Length: 310
Image (cartoon, rainbow, N blue to C red; front, side, top):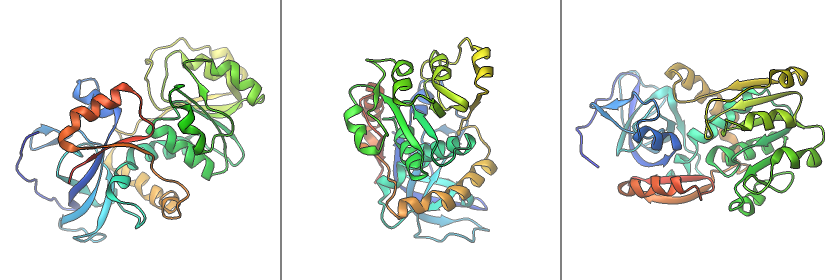
């Protein structure tokens, strides 16, 4: 932890007094030098891809927001701090039903899940398989898919399956460390999965193709088991399947602003109505960030780990 001088609030931006931020695996990889991060504050590379707080200052040209507004946002970086500078187009109002800790647990995982479901062109009544269903993105995807009328299946560690049962999976969670989902799913859903959200990668691709329905779609949202694999193209062709990928961090501000606008229209009302909610496993103070990273590395959490800043 260190002190840096306050940042100026440029045209079209606001300065937020940050009350909470969240831990993402990208933050841990960034600290290890294994994830691209080019966002700097006063020359310091500060992690943190989301925040929630109160607007302390508005820059020239800002018309939508005012001092004192409760807001949260997806960030290019800089969330692990007491203040954050954010373009006004990236801000979202915190629903009255949510506090700062809950709001800080939303942007990265729910944006990723929402974007993946939109890319997959999901439709009411389709089947969807969510890998790493106990993760932040996984718990977000399950809730969104349920809210949109999809039939949801999920895989998770056997240590976490019991805690997933209340989230609305169509069948029992599949414990990937005890059984092969490619052997279990055909009995649970013979027609196969219309959509698969996969943050795992690596050798999961072949198993994904095996359980994919005809004209099914696989969305790659992470690479926990590596980014290289031998792809059986014939199986992809036979099933007329689609393999697509998505990454939130490297998108331009314009792209993220457009996604923010759509999210506010399509998803934020679901939080206001109580139909979906952020799943929070544990809260740490910002000064305990190293303990928070160590806890996430252990992999025992379900949902999000949040850092309380003030």
